Amino acid sequence: MPNKKILAEFPAAVNATKDLTQKQKDVLITSIQLFAKQGYANTSTHQIAVAAHQSEGTMFKHFKSKANILRIALDPIIHQIIPDILDELKQETLQQPMTNLHDFLEFFVRNRMAFADENQDAIKVFLSELLYNEDLRAEFLTNATASFVNTFKTVIADFQRRGLMVDWPFPIVFRHIMSVLGGYVMDRYILFPDRDWDDDQQAHYLVLALEKVLSA
Image 1 (cartoon, helix red, strand yellow):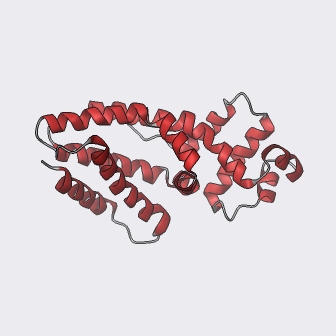
Image 2 (cartoon, one colour):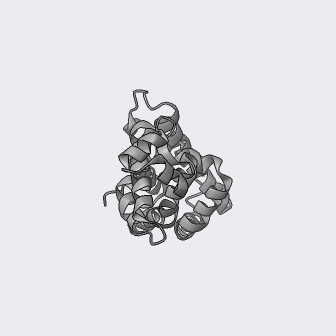
């Protein structure tokens, strides 16, 4: 199943929001397009206003600052788009034959790498905000991940029951997998995007590293 693209889903999610005026929706959609294209720091409020066909005064009346535009734009992503994406991943995960740990890690790592590649523009726009805004991060974890984490917990418990994975507490296993994948995403799309990346090789080593640590 093709991965959903966050920025492609964003306009529909914003337009479905009932407590925003059309002018506010236009600003959010336009600003995210500009942030993705030229970067948050390189996008001025004047550019956003011009592209959204509004005056800066009107825009500031509604949003106060560029940072607040980004913060409000994250709401439909946290409450609607990300939960839909995780539900899609949950269904795909449950459909995979869980015969051994290697095959599961191979599926999960490559699936999430493909998702990151297709959503690299969104990652560049939103990742720093999620990393450094504690309240926003807590809101994201509360609203977006509970169902998927429970599914993941079931899969991990099954591997442990069959003696195929180390008998560590689930939070430790989950954090290790996510930190390995998160480190790859940070390197690949934020810190060193211009390196000559061989993603197939990267996937091989990520799976190898996870399997080495997590195998029983």
